[in-house]
Image (cartoon, rainbow, N blue to C red; front, side, top):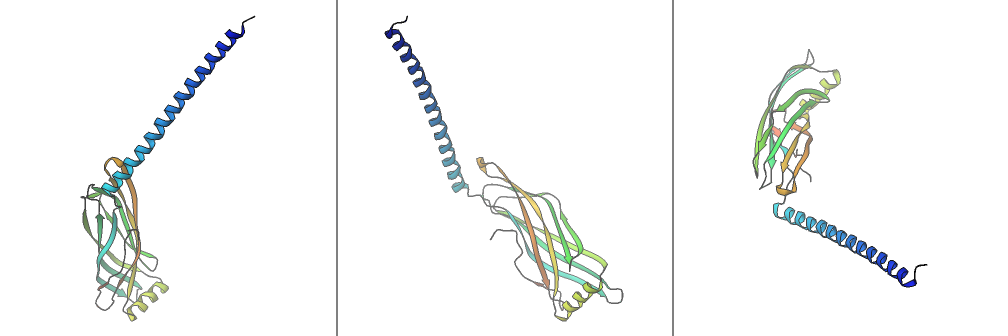
Length: 206
């Protein structure tokens, strides 16, 4: 039979091996934890230094160039100029805008589709796009014709503008970001002189 001293020596060796394993695991976990903390601090400092801002789009001007109403045929012909500005407030990164599509409608009836090719906006800059929405006489149902007639009496013509664009920009080592800018607002015009009534129309988060 093995002596007691040999048994004690064997157990001591096993305990020593386990202690070394536990110590190694503890060291590895500590290193991983410190790495995560350091990465978080670096990311936070980078955010404070770069201060990334989400690009956005907004309507800055519009004008109802012409409007023709055929009361007998119940049809509407019009042309509207809409200036949509793409804003990039990042002072260290360019922003790419793509899939820019907007629908102009009157009382639920689509009048025109506004589109723009892919484009880039330089850092801390903006780009204006002049969209000209032109529609040949569009047939209106009786309810829509009544809405237009009521608007003429109130000296107020109102369109709905819906749509958006996709934005991509890179913020230093923080990586690349993607975001969708959406517009959903009403554009109001005086029926008497066709001038635009300014109102807030932006995708910027309040």
